[in-house]
Length: 286
Image (cartoon, rainbow, N blue to C red; front, side, top):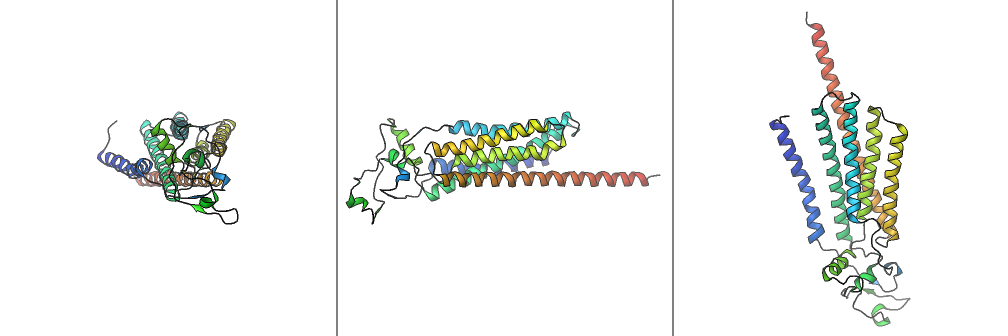
């Protein structure tokens, strides 16, 4: 299968666009510094114990990327098998275009999540347990119940009992300032919402079991819900952080699926018009 110059240029342009979104994600993740926020000593929402994640980042990334991409590939292959698409070349082109749309959307979600985390600098529910501020919680520093003091002059000494390794301890201290919004939730909700609505719009074109598709959609929404709730249960985020992440991920997924659907409708309409013009010309030929 040969690739024309225009197709090669399109692929290069797509890669550059993804890099323009993907590189800032890495810069924010490894070089960005969160806004420094203080706390009230009496704020019990920051005194929860530290727990490991029920769904680790690697698992969430694998599921949130892997399931939608698999759905895209299998859906287009099914269209080929059912005769909705005539050539393997068109199937590959459609898979590529939908995957590019999906990846651009998921990169955008992660970039926006990173920007929100660093700019807000909201403290996680386990902040006190992880940070171990080098202050004495006395009335001179914290103030009184009716006149509390917003503490900003402190340094995190870190919890060596939880994190004996110094690099891990430093990493966790930095992460303890990145509560808003939930990156796990935004990524899971984007991937699963994309998968649900992609199936909803594409399986109409193929002979697919309505019950099987509905079961798969339900399982994806269950995963997104469970992942979101686990972030609160694990004391990683406040409920509002999870709600904001769910809104961000779901909204962007709906927008991406809508854009992809409009592209397909435009392509279908253009193709139908072209075929109709060819038919009219052929009918006029003696």
